[in-house]
Length: 617
Image (cartoon, rainbow, N blue to C red):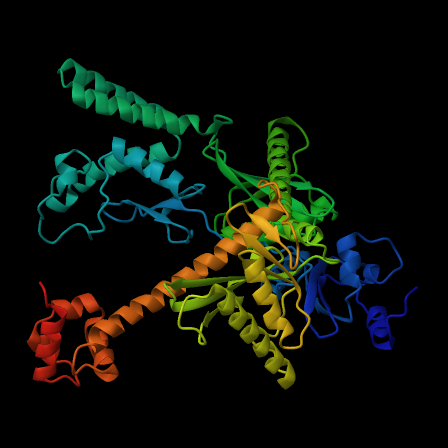
């Protein structure tokens, strides 16, 4: 058995037979795991025995240097404390939900005299009626449109009843509002209409469809065919909303259905939402490093995180598996949070078990798709970089790749762009620009020479001072936009500093040819290969980054030229004018009086500027 050290062994021997929480710490004192236990002595000691652990637990144990315990009176107290400690410390080895989005739902404050529907993302204990959650903003907007298409519900934010009647808006004229602001309906009449809205949101579509069909038939009988057609479209919208929901049962059940899929590495939890006896949607949550853990422990940890962060707790929670005795503990905790009865069940047969099976199937599908996306992403980034390195003859995969491009307009305002890709992905904070200093005409070869010399000279100075700076991290691979000539100048720039260049290659745009230094023939790759596509992305990103900066410099130079070419306008006045008007266009449109009012200007300079900018109009 491993010797954990005198201090730790003493703490292990003194563990109490009590419920509570334990905090595992690394050597630097960081809390890496928080757990709870019915019996702290048995639970915490199990980590330090020579027994087989899951990969995640084994990895966590290898980093333990110390631990702390917090005693509790009951298991429920330990459960709540564990949830709060996880939120506070965010330990690496605990289940941490990365998805912090709050799904939208509809709120109706029935205490208001003329209530309306509001979209909100948080449920408060304010006495209002909440409907949802709706999976995405589009879903909740569709519901509101369906409601307002049937019921003349007000949508304005006016405080009602109004002190004085107001003129009704267009919604009243087209029959989409009862205009309580104008006194066109009583509070009782509006309340009767709003009861229909509540029934509709609770799933009573039948009465809504019946009313709409009667209105359509009446309009058709009166030969108001356009109105009948509009009502027909409303019926279709409501029926479409009904069809998108899966009918489960005839009662008014309110359930969350929670199940899990694991692949040995990661886990995926699926939550299905059942409201008003209908499934209204669901969502999945990825749990890294939980793929080999006990399913019940994973789902219990998930529920603590999930319901600890939301006020939207259903009356019933159906869960695939939980540790022994945990259902009662979670039930008590959820009841305490919700303030009303909550049941937590692990159905093993019947309709509820079929729901668990459906949730598990969705979880497995989401995990498979996530893994497929991850595989594709890795193939296009890290995998593509590795393959590119192999093709170029590198003995190790290039972690940092730098791409260079030169931008200018007829040799004016030459700019070199340096972009950086790390592990096959853009690292935009590492991008750099270089204004070409030594040349007055277009010369991409010498511009590249100057750029690479300056880039590596910066790195040398930073290394001499021992301070990490913007250029300390040197590339494993350099891409030059161009062919053999551009590549030769870029490589020579580094050699002339007495340094050995890293692996370099040029990418010639015409045939997407890959050139290596001193190579007689280029390398031609299939355009569909991830490695060539990565090289193209780096080249195109360098070009884009250089063009943007070049255009900015060219625009500033144009303003500088047009203003300072006018007698009496120097750098100070140019700066004051741009600060006052914001743009050359605004300066040109200003009259001489406005120009003369700018600090630092006088009447003569203002008139000369106005005449100079508007000459030839």
